Length: 285
Image (cartoon, rainbow, N blue to C red; front, side, top):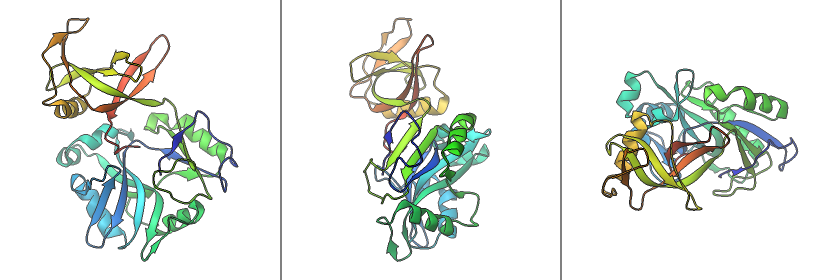
C-alpha cells in the first residue's frame, strides 16, 4: 500500500478502526520474503536488492522463519540520524565507515502457512510484534502509537534525527497493494517530482542539476550535491548528455535528453530553494 499525502495529522477516529501513527523514515521501501535459507528484499519496482545489503540479508535469513513476509524499509543510521544517501554507497564503504543498516518493518503480510493481508492492521500489527520480538537490532518494528498527542510530539521533535514526518493508517484496514485510502502521510516539507533536464559542473561529478516541473518552469538545485549523489546522477545520465553550453553564471551546463524523473524538495519564501532528494526509481517511499 502507498499512502496519500495530507497537510495535517488526522484525529484518532479519522480512519477505519482508529488511527495508528508511525514515524516516516527515509529509506528503501522493500518487502522482505523469508524463504528459508535466503531472504528476498523486493523493491516496488520488482528488483531484489538483497545482494546490495548482504549483511542485512544474512541477518534476516537467520532471524526470520520461512514463510514470513514483511513490509518495511531498509534504513541507514549515521551521526545520530537516518541518512538515506548512505544507502547509495557500496556495502564495503558503508561497513568501513561504520554505517549501521537495519530493516524497519511496519506491516506483516504473511506468517508461515497463511496470507494475512485481509486481516485488519490491528491484527497484523500484533502478529508483526510477536514475530520480531527479541530479534537482533538490525531487525526492528517501526515506532508507532495510537495516541495523537504522542505522535504530534514525535512529529515536532524527531526531525533532527532524520524522521520526515508521520504515516497514519486505519487500524481496521486490510492490506491492498497500490491502494491509498487507508494510509496517509504527513511530511514537514513535501517533495515533488520533476524531470532532470541538465547537469551543471563536471559531467562525472556534477555540482547541481537543472530540473523541469510539470508547468514547464525550470530551476537549479541547491546546495551542492554530495559526492555519492553526484556519482549516482552521473551514472543515470551517461549517454544522455547533449553538447556543453554555459548557464547564466557561466558554469558549464550539459543538457540531458529524456532524463529521468527525480524527486526534489521545494521551499518557498525569501530563501526559496529546490533541493535534490533522489532519482525517482520507485524504491523509496
